[in-house]
Image (cartoon, rainbow, N blue to C red; front, side):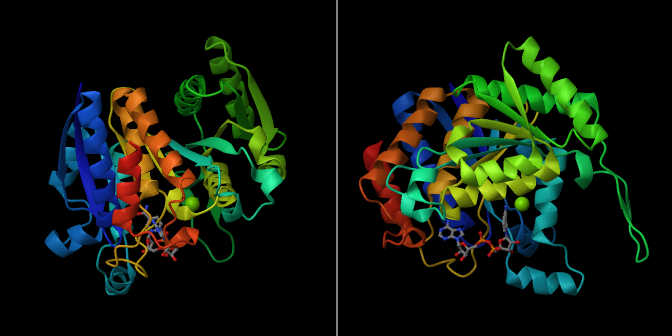
Length: 349
Ligand code: NAI
Ligand code: MG
């Protein structure tokens, strides 16, 4: 099996955590017989420094031609200052890349690792066993609808086509098949027309795929996510609801340094894999960033880019074992450096 990836280290702790993730990817590729090819490209603030724009043409072309993209993080206070004087923003690169790669399905797993119960703001007996995958529609709805700015009245439209709902529903069903097979779809069908369309299409796709689906209204879901998070497995929802619920779910499961994400396009097209945290300028360059979010993103890359399920599970198992053996970076109340954390995972591999 061959795997040709583009690495976008980006800014702040981005290069530190993607470096760690690559060490793990290389090790597991060797043991699984995967022929790994990877190359770094400038992106975000680093690309603005190098060539004046956050998403250089060459970077975009390489991403589109790859099997998958591993991204660190972009942004930083210096770029915010420069943007006030008219410079481009690193985040424009990220939005541009999501659009150009047509990344309509954003997968965000939130899992409470055994032994890390204390990292959750919820009581241990409530949060124990939580393992949720939120599938958020990423290129439609309110964020991409028509907009009218105004100071007396303003307007944001929330459009969805059946086709847009169907493709993300299929991605969620696919993901659920690889997990417990329990699928929940979240909407506001008692009020919104797009939610009624959403529900109809999700029901049709689930029936075609032979999968049961439970529908939950978004306000109730917000409540269940904190009152009984361990009851959920795959949760499918539209762009705005997914933005909110996925942040909530990641907080339920503990540190921001642990959480990975995958953004997927149509089957056969490359996806983008990144930790959910930002560039953490407060700790950048100190070698103390938690690399686990990036390492778990590399596992998702193996799973979704080339279907290397065994290799992906090896990484996830090694992370779980390292945490169970006491690995704690600073964000988890410990003292392990990025390098020590990476070594601890390598050892478990
Ligand atoms: P952040 O996630 O960078 O940091 C929030 C807090 O969490 C900080 O105290 C940081 O030290 C800590 N933290 C984050 N990741 C960590 C890790 N792996 N290990 C240990 N501690 C970690 O969010 P913040 O501060 O709001 O944003 C900083 C910059 O990152 C901004 O320029 C923002 O625009 C950008 N950003 C970029 C994202 C991306 O590239 N996808 C996502 C979120 C923010
Ligand atoms: Mg958000």
